[in-house]
Image (cartoon, rainbow, N blue to C red):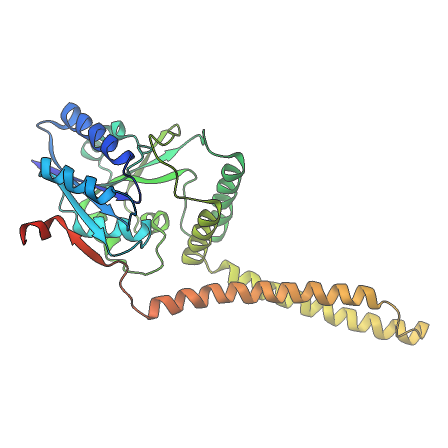
Length: 316
């Protein structure tokens, strides 16, 4: 039979992980018995709780369970890549351990690929029930902004939760860039994609690891990874203020010759200097963001470092 690899990124998920495994097993037995084999690949992203211990317990009772444990916290993007690298299935799905990605949708996603000829099936939330209103507002604004800037379409509400054929997985893992934004990479590789919509599901246990600041940095990562529009914007702003300054100089000269009052207007001059200086710092910051990404890429550091896997148990 064909095999489905379930890749699950975990960071301090000791409360949610057993519940996730129980629900996944229920779905597997109910919808996939005799249809497809499964393997679970749990990636421990430097958790500080008992997440790794739970993974080992699940492995001891179920040979379908595999795990990868990082040497430290490398982030969700690195964890997803590690899972994709290790997956052996004909189809691979990415899921979160908190059950915000409903396992019950997996059979529908599988049927779409098998019967409708799509290469991958993605999921998107049509509501953000349970999220703070301010976070929902900025999330919607982010997708509007990035879709204006980028040639790659970013679907509003899209989750990392998707089911992919092997050829899609191979295309994604061939992109070894250090600064990763998977939602953009999924769109970049192309392939025929169908979207399944569902209402937002709150975490089954534990607390979210995504603070507003982390989401903000992730949004900046997405913009700089898939658009050079901010660099163009900084150039346009620079040109605009050069033109403004040129006409301002002419105006000052004319005013001085006509009214003979070269010293008036210094408060407004100070305001202009402060404003333009702020614009300069802003544009330098944009350039610095791209420069820092280039710096990280050229160092060629590994995206993640594995400390142990289930294979190490066999070598003891």
